[in-house]
Picture: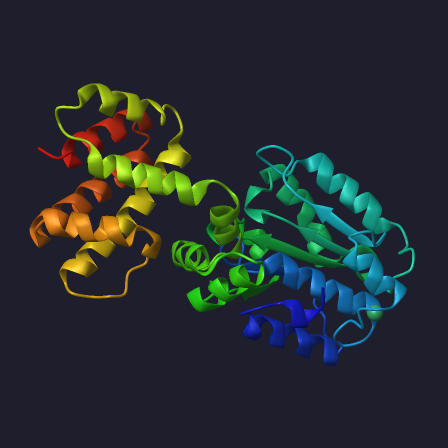
Length: 320
Ligand SMILES: [Zn+2]
């Protein structure tokens, strides 16, 4: 994957291309930006170009072909083993980097989720970042730079990656053969992350969200049994509950838009339901519901039991 395969990250790519052209490649980089915005693809393209020796990476030499198949012996990937990147993984990396490259001019290394380096592993890495053996290039990736130790950050050239524009995500999802409507909804819920958009279209997420929203809109306060059964599904599943609340929030904002007369809604596949809820609720009522969802989102962040949060939420949103 050369730089031409990187979408929506022109400024980061320009910086890297210039450093290649000027033969001023740094020892260590830190790429930051949300999950799924292209940090890893860019890191691979950069290392491919360094290995190939041509500015873009030619894409056809043996080195580029090995990079494309993920089989290059001089490329080292490190990612968390469980919750952390452990010190043993960093020691192993250091052992590898100390060996001469097999065929590339220097070795390349990508460390995923640098915010999840165990403190001992991070400390062990400091010296390597300053003076990588054999002039190796290390690229650290992180969606959460606030979680990366300042001593690590200060030793890296930091490049910020932007979230992808919604149109870009939609175009990329469409190119993958997804239907227009699903692509649009996934892109609008993706928050600029290709990974999140693909998760939405590939998994059952879109349908699950539709069922969730339809159920919430159909429950009545007299349905205590149904409400409990519905909430049960979120028992101990904080991430799932949080994801569904985000989607419900997006739906309610569409209802608000509809009440304001806007034809532009995000959840276009649920347009009839948006219409229906807008017909039964006043602007104030919808604002109140959005406020309720926000309160529950905050409660979840404070580690309230997800099932309880969902029960409370649905009780408050249920039709009287
Ligand atoms: Zn090449």
